[in-house]
Image: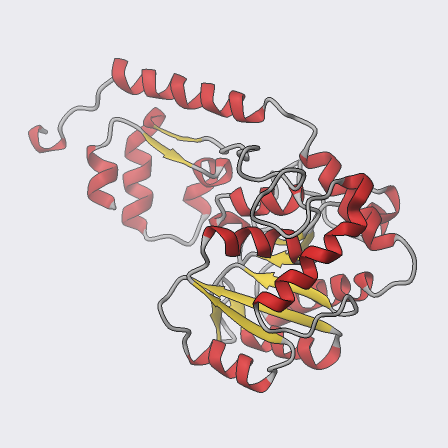
Length: 295
C-alpha cells in the first residue's frame, strides 16, 4: 500500500474526513508521512450513492418495494430478512445489522466489543445479524450465535442480494468508526430508512446529526452516534436507540422517514461526484508525479 501511494500520480480517499484529518488518526507514522508527501495529489471525494443500485422504490433484490408514503411495507422486508437468516419473524424486536468486526478485547476503542452486544441482548428486545468478510466466523461470533440462537445470526461474505436484504430489512445498522467508513453502506441505509449507528470521532460532518432528545423533537436527527467503541461510550448510545424503537407511537417511523427524505434530496449527487473524479483525473494527467527511484 505504501509503495502504491509513493508511485501514484494521484490518491483519492473515499472519505473526505480521512483526507483532511489523516494526521490525527491512529495510523502508522510511515503512512502519515507517505500521505503528507503527496501534497495536492491526495484528496477526498465522497462517492455518491448509485440510484440504479440502491433505491427502495425499484430494488429488484428486496421482497417489497416501498417509499416514505408506504413505509409500513418495510416490515415485509424485515420478515424476509429474518427468514433468510433463521431468526424469529416478528416486528417486536429491533433488528440490527453489524457491518464490521467484533472484538473481545475491552480496551479496543476501534472495533465493536462483544460485551456491548451481550449487554444489549440481555437487557433489550433486539436481534443482531453479524456480517463478516471471512470464510469462517471466529470464536467471538460463534459464541454470540450459540449463546443467543433466537437473537443472533451470522452472515458470512454477504452477496449483493444479502446486502440489499440487510439494508432494506434492518431497523438499524452499526458501523465501527466513522473515520474508517467509505460511507457507501451508511448512505444506502439512509435511503432505505435504516437508522445508522456511527462514531463521531471526526465531528466535521455537518450532515450527520446525533439522535439526541432535542434533535429528535426537532426532527433533524439522522443517526445515533457514539464517541468510541468502549462499552461505557457505545452501550448507552445503543440502549438509547433500542429504547427509542420500543416507544409507543409514530416516533421511530418519523425518524426513519425523515432520513429517507434527506437522503433523496440531491438527485444530482452522483453526477457531481463523477465530475470531481474527472477533474482530479485530469489533474493527474497534467501533473504526473516524478519517479521516486530517481530522487
